[in-house]
Length: 150
Image 1 (cartoon, rainbow, N blue to C red):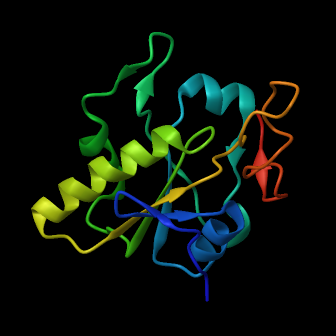
Image 2: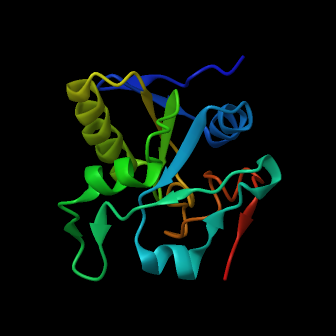
């Protein structure tokens, strides 16, 4: 059974491998909240080995990084009538996805929908390394999880 690495403001924090395990178990979806530029230039989690696709909704819009005012509605719209038991949120390093998870969790609770929102704590690229670059310390890519780049 997957164990969470902790909780921040009531949002469970999952390491990338834990998140992939949850997604592999079914009845869960991954919401990638990075920008279109990040998806195109940095890559995307590849969930095809487990028969899934990430839900892509920007939390902030590139290039000015203003918050997407329709974020919650866009996520819920992408899910349709099939809200899974768990929604996992992913960004570059775990900060934006934490805020996104809090917003969606609040909206779902207000609607009376039972769904656990979790944060992928290390994100897709992870923390900055000693060289001030991402992608070498931790994160989805460094942990060897499937990903694709266009």
